[in-house]
Image (tube, rainbow, N blue to C red; front, side, top):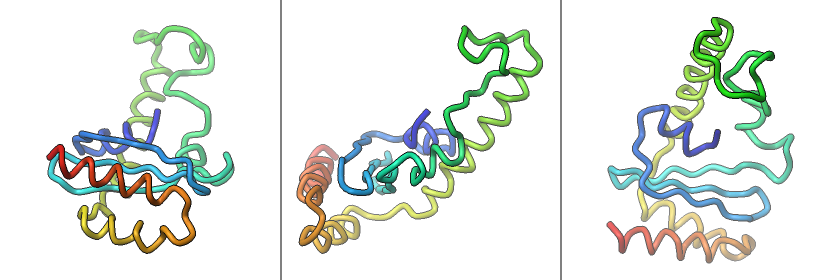
Amino acid sequence: MSYELALEAAGAKVVAFQEFGSYQGDWLARLDDGRYVTGSYGSCSGCDAFEGEFGYGSARCEEHEYIEPAPECAECSVKAADYSTRLARFGAEYLDGATTYAALREKFVADSSWDYEAKEVIKWLDEQEHVA
């Protein structure tokens, strides 16, 4: 699972998604309505909000964790439903902060004095606006 899938689980249609290797590991998503969502996946596994919420677990029971999904397994069904609900709620928190191209570009231009990846982010944002 990923941040992109969390946004989609919350009802967004992601048309472009990109991760950048800056210190905090920025990610950006362009939504079909022209808004942008951004976040970071942290500089280590302890800093990653997604990993903190979901760990390395899955939506399967312990018995079926590493094999094909078992639709007949009641415990897998319960875990899958819980995972889906939590995934949508997690993604919705990021959607609440959706912003415009101009505002996000301005932020990364301001950060470019210290963020070595900011120029790549700006380039990606500009490319997205030319695709639209």
